[in-house]
Structure formats: C-alpha cells, structure tokens
Length: 264
Image 1 (cartoon, rainbow, N blue to C red):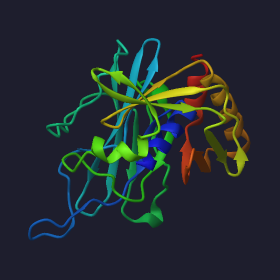
Image 2 (spheres, rainbow, N blue to C red):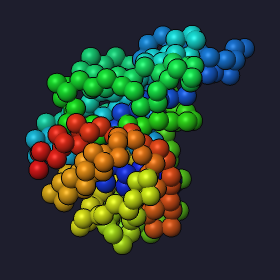
Image 3 (tube, rainbow, N blue to C red):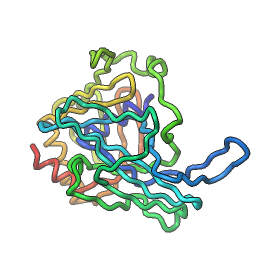
C-alpha cells in the first residue's frame, strides 16, 4: 500500500493526470497455453489507483487501455472520464467493457523489442477533453493488471493507513492525506522541490483519489515549468512521505504544465 500513498503524493504535487507510455508484455499461463497473448481489442489497465482532478468546471479522470498483438507489440491509449458536475463518477469496469469511443488524449507505441523503444514517446491530442490534466508520463516495469484480474481490498490497506485521519464520502470511509513540507519531501535529479502550503488528498476504500486543484498548485507548476526549461522533461524523482519513500524515473509534459498553470 506504500505505492498508493506515494502515487497520490506524486499526482498532487504535479497537479496531474498521467498517461501510461510503457507497459510490460502481457502473457498468460492459464490452461494449456503459456506465453504472449493477443488481446484482440483494447484491454483496460487496472490502475494502482483511480485519480480524479477537480476543476471549477468539472472533474477529469484519465485512464489507459492497451492493445497487444501476438508478438507483444502494444499501442497504449489514454482517455478521459469527464464529469461536468465535478461530483466524480469514477469509471467502473465491473464487466470489463473495452468499448470506449471518447477522444484519445494520448497514444503511445510500445514495441516488444526494448532496443527500438523510447519509454516516454507519445502523441498528444490537445483538442481532447481532458488534455488539460495530462502532465505526467508513467512507465511500468511490472504488470499492474488488466481488467478482470483483481482489486486490492480495504482490509489490505488497514495497517498502512491506520494513522491517517478519515472522513466520509458517499457513505463510505475516505482517508485524508495532508501533503506539506513537514510530511513530504520531493526532489528531481537531486534538486529539492519546494512545497507551497498544504495540499489535501482524499482516498476512498477502493483506491480512488480526489485531488482538488487548489490555488497553491499554481506555485508548484511554476517551479516545475522552470525545472523542465533548465533540465529537460525527464527526471529521476525521489519522494518521501512520513516513513515511506520511493525512487522512480518520470516523464513530464511541458505543454501540459503550462496549460494547467494558465488555469489558475
């Protein structure tokens, strides 16, 4: 569950929705077959968390689907589940429905041959609803699951979240994650990032995150924009929240940072 907390902090700090641009080859060992599979159609990538960024005119929830051929080559598509009321109706995949006709916010070509692959390559359609929330690119080195695999349980999170304050959301429990300079440390390529004021993230028992886009996010975005201008759009991120920490390589979307910055 450490990944859930740290992932939440990353998304709050970057005021971001994310697009998956790199994903492991999907294999199957069930039954008599063992090896690479062809998905036949786009498969919903079950996220480690569902994230909705709340804006004055509605909420954005970016999600990704992957299509894989029989050689393991993939196309990864990122869509937006938009709710104009900002009441946040998270996308449900109870029936593993792969049919989604919305605009493709981002598309990434991910060949099985890593030697010819650029981890953070993608195309971005800025005319798509939800493009405004794309600021972060994510590469997965291990499969997090496709629709039909599993969801983490509330009981599994109990120990990790025991010290967090709680509130209620739609009749259930939601955890309150305060992000400030006392609880959180973030650095990019060894450069310490300032944390302006406090961000408050809410996490439901189904690993769904609510991230209000508060005015202090503007200062984080301005700092990130300057960092990208000086250092480029790829970085190694080190993040510590309380007693847990993580280190990962990330990609940034400069135009997305600027677009979000202009909304405050």
